[in-house]
Length: 92
Image (cartoon, rainbow, N blue to C red):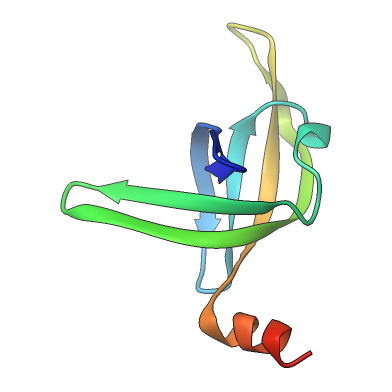
């Protein structure tokens, strides 16, 4: 995940749909404020997909921290900017 060109590693993809995704991340939930624009890179053996989105919610993860390093973790909800969503913004 990229925010303003800075890369943030994703621990896990919790779920994904055509409208959005939720991600498990290192860091405190307050590190990722709502309305931040993000770029997500999904990599697979046969290629890569890059999509843009906006953080719509963040919360501490159930485990709260990586036990080995005591690093806080959070879960982010990201709304993907798909064409019909972009049309809503341009017609506003």
